[in-house]
Length: 384
Image (cartoon, rainbow, N blue to C red):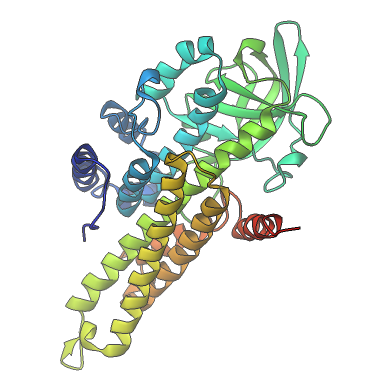
C-alpha cells in the first residue's frame, strides 16, 4: 500500500515515484532469494548510484542530490519497505560519507567527494570494536604517526558490507585521552595491511555482509585524516544523530511492509465462513499496528525537519530511533501472529521481517542508550 506522503516540492514527489518503481522492479523480486543465499547485491548499489539515489542529502556543489533530509529519509523508508538490507546499507553509506563532506578540507572534498558521491563507490563505517560498542571512549585501535603516515593496528567489529566497501570511515586512537584521543580517517579499499574476518552468522539481514575489519600495520597517509587530530569523537557523535534517523526511517519502512502483508493476508484468509479481517479482535490488532507505524513516521519526520531547519535535533533523533525501532519489533511480531502458522514459516516474509526488526533496536546505539540520551537531555534542560 503506497504511503500518502506530504513532501516539500514537486521534484520530491517525482523522486519518490522513481524510487517506488525501482523498488517494485529491481528490489522486491530479488529480496527473498538474496536473503536466503546471503548474497550481497553489489549491482543494486551501482544501480542506485547511477540514478543519483546514493547521495541525496549532500550538497549539489559536492556532487550530491541537494535534497532535504526529510526527503532522503522517506526514500530510505521506501527502500526498507522493499528490502531492509539495501536500505540500511544506503544509510551506512550516507553516514560514512558525511564526515568528509562536513569536516574535510577543501582539497579533500575536491579530491575524494566526487567519487564517494558519484554512485560507483560504497562506503562503510568503522567505529565499533569487540569491546567498544555504545562506549565510544573505549576504542582501542591505534593510529601512530610515523612521518607522513599513520600506522594503524587494531580490530573493528560489526562493519556492515565491510568487504564490499570502496572506502571506510575509520576512527582510531591517536592519544590515550578517552574523549579527545580519537581521530577520523578516510581509508580507501586496497590499503595494505587491511583485511577482514569471517562474515558474521546473523539471524537477519543476511544479504548485508557484516565482518570484522582488521588493521595490521596499515599505513594511512596523514593527508587522509579528516579534521584535526583528536576531533574524532566530535565527528563520530555528530554523524550518529543523523545515522539514528536513517535507522528510524528504515525501521518504519520495515514496519510498513509487515503491516501491508498482514492486511492483505487478513482480507484473503477465511475462517468460520468469512475473512478474518471481519473479526473485531483482528481489526483492533491491525489498527494498533497502523498507529505504531504512523507514529514512527511522524517522529522521524519531525526530527528531520528540525535538522533541515538548522535546529538542534539530538533528542528528537534519539526519540525517533527508539520509537520507530520498538514499533518495528512490535508490528513485525504482530504480523507473524496475524498470519498464524504461515507466519512462522519461510513461505511468507513475516518471519524475516521479525528477524530483521530485532537488530534495529541494537545498532546505531541500543535503545537503552537512546533512553539515556533522552533522559539526560531532559534533566540537562531543567532550570537550576
